[in-house]
Length: 271
Image 1 (cartoon, rainbow, N blue to C red):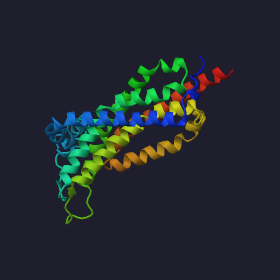
Image 2 (cartoon, helix red, strand yellow; image 1 turned 45 degrees about the vertical axis):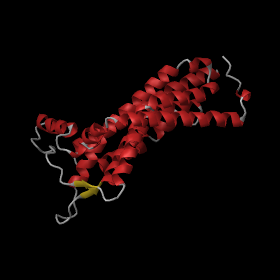
Image 3 (cartoon, rainbow, N blue to C red; image 1 turned 120 degrees about the vertical axis):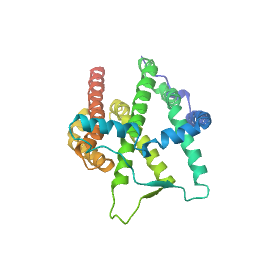
Image 4 (tube, rainbow, N blue to C red; image 1 turned 120 degrees about the horizontal axis):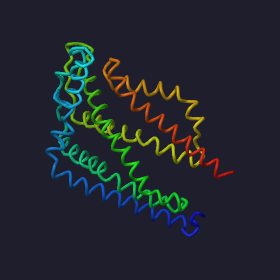
């Protein structure tokens, strides 16, 4: 099936389509941010600030895991010795707005994907355009899995590490609200973007910019990088580092497998 003739649209027409894509995506984010405003108390107290409490799900699970493995309370987290304080006049207002926007972006992500798909679909084959629902579903699933991974794994491990690390007993931890929220945003969005790696590899392989041989060649470097990231965001124990590293390694292996499938199909089409 031939591709749609992209010459039907001028460069300015493409820019206009892109502009409206950004406008609609921004409006969707703002609308969902307004929705989160009505549950802001729960959003901040129970969700965003949840990982600073020893009763958080991840800490409880780690303690249960410690007992199951016969480590007693060795990896139990029963106390987090720090406080979070606001030091700016408009600090809490700014944080409130930006975190609502972040929540709005996360909730509206499937719609934003749909807008992106509509923008790129004219350059695809008819068969590929029929896979819109699958693309939206898989991309959204990976994105939300990344958000959950960042929230339930990366953030608690990071909080525990900075709360327990000290250069001296004289120094007490008093973190600013801005720095904590910055860590939350970085951890969640960073994990969500990393979990989109299979989708990125799919399109890069389709474009001929990446091959499975290339990904396999640099597999060792990817493993080292992932282990370094896991070591940075977790306490210095093997269990925590493994819990963070394994899902990231699985995502990378999944990306290699997807690249192999796409590359093989591409070779068949060129025969």
